[in-house]
Length: 155
Image (cartoon, rainbow, N blue to C red; front, side):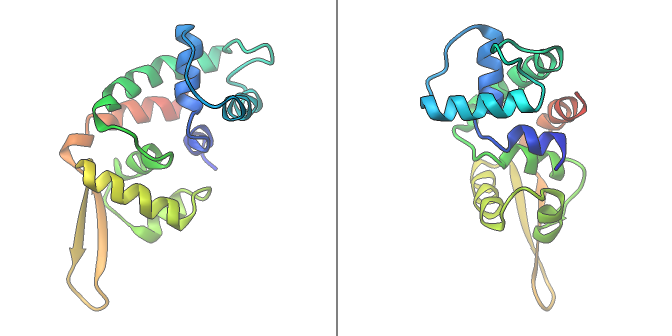
């Protein structure tokens, strides 16, 4: 699994990192918070005492910009940002997305794509031919997120 996929494997990972950096509490279920924190400790982003590591601090800084850019989009599913990152490079078919995100189930990818298309962040194009093929690409509205996702992936 790529680092970005590992980070977003838990839906609340980035918001929790940002809330630790801001020192502001986040309203989330206790068990979800504890499980996500344990995953962040395992990834080396948070120390066992709950403080951010150097790498976790870099990710939280970049993640804060990303979350503020996405506030207008409402609630996105946990695989939406990794999908946007993959689509930022070039248009992809569903099978290519599935191969690029090995930790995501086909259903999770499908539901996230539907949400992204509804939000106007992804363009869905059905290509003529037999059998018909569907291609997904990053919409103009989401192209500004690509550099933020690239920075997050490089940390």
